[in-house]
Amino acid sequence: MFTGLIEGLGAIVSLDSEEAGIRLSVRIPAEMLQENASGPTALGDSVAINGCCLTVIAMNDDVWQFQAGEETLSKTNLGRLQSGHVVNLERALPANGRLGGHFVQGHVDGQGKVAAIDADGEWVKMWFEVPPALAKCMVTKGSITVDGISLTLVDVETDRFSVALIPHTLSVTTLGTRNVGDPVNIETDILGKYVQKMLGQTSQG
Image (cartoon, rainbow, N blue to C red; front, top):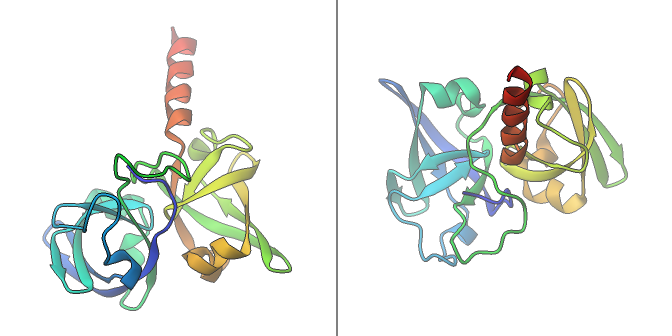
């Protein structure tokens, strides 16, 4: 479980093809090499990369390795990454940690893309196009996860939504470098998924 509060920006060192997926090597920022509330990061721990929960399988100083399979690559933008690309990183939430965002599973529902970037000084209103099935799980003032970042929904339409981004968010996450057309990972609020399923079952019954 994660919160959607990005701990740092990592850099892709390499992506190596494997039989059923890829192996990602990521350079970890100094602030994440220190202990957090649950102690130092160890092999087998979970880390969200652009909002996708992956397991640490190897550690060599400041370079950690992860594996992503076909299902993950088909649902996320990880397969589009190249050496040098920057990614959002967050370690799993410890039981005694502070929940500052919202409950994020790290299970990406699908991809969207940046539809528009409306700047107002240092502030930005960013629009994202998404499949209608994902938009059905969103509500105005509810929570959404974009590339692992916990955000508040401003506008929700049939196939797109908007969020308001403060200068801090733009400076410490990859959203500050996104351009129109860029793909992003989307995870809708888990509460919305359960409500939608329950209402669907009720209507069918």
